[in-house]
Image (tube, helix red, strand yellow):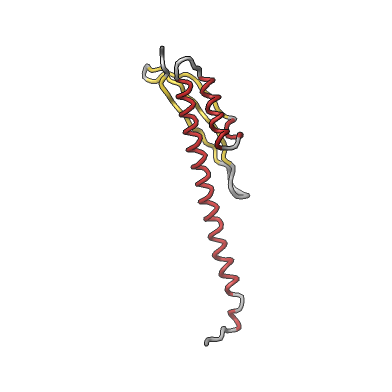
Length: 128
């Protein structure tokens, strides 16, 4: 049986700290990317749904913005629904509704900048 040498006592603690110093930021970075992607995908889906809602007959862009806010509040925190706007626009002669959502995703850790997201949803306006 091998007897550990005296000068190696405590080396496991040093190894643990060195590995932890690499793994913790890596895991936090992966979680931050996952959070941003989740929020972006949710906002994009809500903006598209809101544009389709506003594009139906007898609706206006305000209805689409309200629908988008409700969708966002149902899945995410209400602060993500503050920057919702909707307007009619024309693309290649077709009247469309565009819903825009602006939101800021906070950093996961105690440091780092927040990520600003701007997503758009479009739908062709139905005409009676």
